[in-house]
Image (tube, rainbow, N blue to C red; front, side):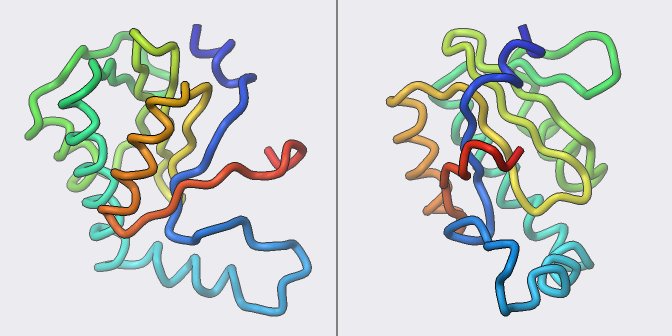
Length: 143
């Protein structure tokens, strides 16, 4: 199912409110490097952990790790937090009842959300804003 979801429409939860154009006059890569360095990176992962924990109040989360067998349905909050914040793990988070997938890779400043329905998308937008993040949909040919 995950392979199928990876081909579906997706949105980005990010530190920026919109996609940065390829010809931007700014210094995107320098700013990205800044946010990927400590202590900012741990702070960013903390925000994603809190977003997922709050999302888990509304939906079941089946958490797995790319390239590894097995997953855990609704892991304890402390465990999910540790995977994201202390261990900086890559995560695949399946929402079984929604047929939606969230991915967060180590070394990225964004989370990708595949195939969200309208209700999930609205909730993710609220949770992202509350965490100081943004939800946006990239142009179709960008990923």
